Length: 380
Image 1 (cartoon, rainbow, N blue to C red):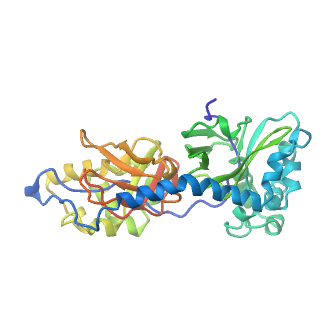
Image 2: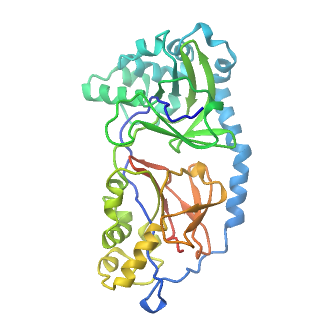
């Protein structure tokens, strides 16, 4: 079964802006100061591969340990045919923040409906505790009186709910997505994205399913360790105000590519920081120099290198595989980057880089894609 119609609660304030889109520079012609391969530390490929291989054992085991500590395995093992979603949540004290949010937003009736057939991604109390007040615990949630905050919380909860029952084995290996029951606002702000690797499911790149398939008589619950926050901004809107991405933004403006990331779409952007650009020779080494480029050949080359940092589909770090070759928007034939998966981070290398760049922060969700901030410019 496909997962393109799944839904459920996410929540809370829109993420901080952090980063945007595409790599930068180098030129096809060495006689116009094109950047050359950078000399950096010894090749780190084997270390990154070893780290990725270790996650095959450690990541699922850590998720299971969390589930056991919270008593969620008991819920999985019990026959839930005589209890609805709300009753199951109420039965475990580690869902008290979720229960408070459901009551506060008036959703208890809908999630108790015996005729419903829902999938709920249920954040634990520890997940809510990562949010700012008043959304961080049951007591504060019970005390919310601001109508706008209640409305926001309701939309976040709806972002965690799918309108059909979907068990973990029905979520495809690799990448998939599902539409939640949250009312649509901006483009793709009611879609959740699944990454299933080594049997472990992550949602929107950052939230892990720590206990799957808790069966209820009106659906199924998957417990997660982070609240899902729906995106509210495009890649461009996230990147432009970020001072650490000013060189990237200058390059996008210089090459007339900024507009690509202001509208709808579904991109992955590996976004080099200013420090990454500073490793390159002038005029590609900072925002001011990039803005001053007038040579048409350099502008053309810069545009192609920016495209070399962009993939035409969403790839979260849990999707990056181990030495996977991903085709970018750059001109072929040398338009693939090599990637290595990670847990809350990842690694990517261009054809002419000596070393892998590290994505950190990674998995920044936008309405039109996902951003991974990297510490090196990728060279085709």
